[in-house]
Image (cartoon, rainbow, N blue to C red; front, side, top):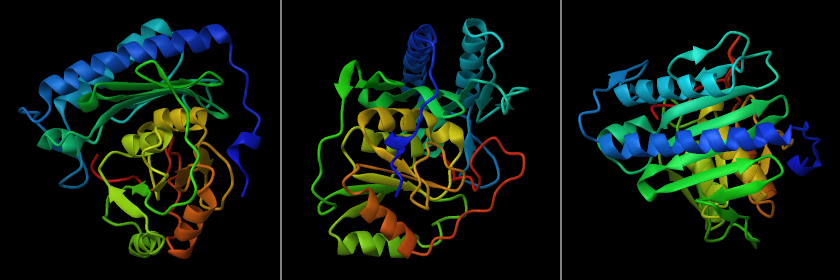
Length: 295
C-alpha cells in the first residue's frame, strides 16, 4: 500500500490559493442559500438516462452562476461541470475548475436533507482548493493545499482510530444499482462490527471521512466533479486516498477509497475480497468512468 502522503505535490502560487479559496467559499454560500430556499418545493426535475437521474432548474442555475463568476475571476481557466460539460482545453490546462451544483439531486427533489454543492480547483497532481457546502447543516467545508481543512472556519483534523469495530463506512450505488461485490463488502464490514451506509451524495460521503464521522468511504465509480472538493478536504484532514490496487492517488480512474490511515488497509481488503470488478474506462472522458446513479 502506497500512502498518498508520500507523493510530491505541485507547488501553487500562494496568491492563487488565497483567491481561489475566497471565491469558492463565496460560491458555496450562494449555493447554500439557493438550495435551502428551493429543496423539495417544485424543483421541476427532468431525467437523464435513468428514472432517478435527476437534473433540475436549480442544478442549471447554480452551474451557470458558478461559471459566470469563475470566468470573471479567473479568465482563461476552464470549467468542467455536471450539467454543461467541459470548456475547451480543460483536459490539457494547468488548472481547471470542476463543479457539481447539486450532488444528491434525487434527495434534493424529494426534500431529503442530504445533498451538497461541490467545487474544486484541480491541477495535474489533484485538488488544489476544494469546498463542499452542506446546506441542511449550515456548514461550508473548505480546504487548500498545504493549508489544512476547515468546517465553517474551524480547523478539522482526523482523530486517531483503533480499528473498524463500531465504525461507519460510506459507499454509493452505481447508476445500474448495487456495484458488483457490494453485498460481500457489506457482509465483511458486518463481520468486523462496522456498518455500511448508502446516503445518496458522493461528496458528503467523502466529507464524512474528512470530518471523522465515518472511518472510510468506498466509491466503486464516480465523476470527478462529485468528489474533487471533498477529496481536497480529506487529504488536508489527514485521510488516505487510494485506488483499488492500494496505490496513493487523489482521483484514480477506476474507483477510490478514502479512509482514516489506521483502517485503510483493512477496508481495502474488504473491497478486494468482495470481488468487485473495475468499471470499464470511458474513452475521451474527463471524468472517472462508470458514473454513479441519480445524485
